[in-house]
Length: 151
Image (cartoon, rainbow, N blue to C red):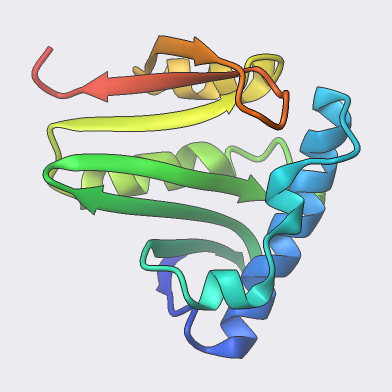
């Protein structure tokens, strides 16, 4: 079941943080870095965010989280994380489908590390295509993908 999360509730923010930490630790290992910026995100950052969070629940357990922002018909996927014990169950795809069908947008974008092949394949499967590559100050080469509903 997918439902909107209220991160201003400290308990909910803690649950989101727990999923972020477990998932991003695996991603940092996949990328091959020990200093991974998303791991530095604290509960207060989550609870103070202006973005929307949606959670996928298995029974009463928060298994995955997608965080999105919408501005001027631009849907930006800020994060998509699945707790490792729920990997390979199609949950990330369900969350992507949910936000793509829930919001009214002209273009959707997402960023990930160039070496994160599983994420890139997942977004490609949902119609996203690469449009940009760069290396930010933290040194992890990234790429941006977009989905234009007018194409």
